[in-house]
Length: 256
Image (cartoon, one colour):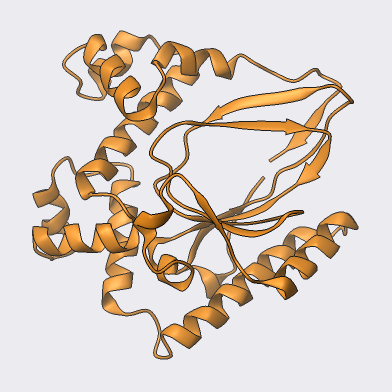
């Protein structure tokens, strides 16, 4: 389940995701996941964690009964949680937030009917407290520019070159590169490449012909798309498409 952040946290959180599942004994649900080039703050029964940007496809394995509360963080939020975002690429770090963990766990475990509002408010307020401590006067211009950079890359018609990104943002190419490294953890070129591969993955999962996908996204040919997909993400498009066909039994329930 994807939930919008409250307006007060709109500069820090892209959206919240709150999966809850209850699978029959012996049932395991596996899915390949291609995440956004961003950090996630996650509260689950184990604690509170920051997951760094992922540079490859990961596998999500679910069994039994469980839940998680995640916030897809905007680039401006990363300095609130990690001093160097590149240090958490493809990894996670624990965060000391006992009060936040207790509030979220109580709401989720009790299956409170208002639990989604409770947990999104709790996480938002926790982030805003840290933001006020670091930046008493509000988001600095560089952090706001980092948010705009991601919005451009993830927008409906992303620019194709660094120079185009810089022109739209009104910054020099060097400044865009510096902002991307500090707030996103990967280069602007890697962000654009990742966006194109995400579009390809979504279309492949939807059942589109691979050659048509390659042509529509500007690849020289199908082989070029397959090489790029395997090099960057570690899977072929065909393998990723197969994962979309794997489903848990009908008796299982998973809400996301």
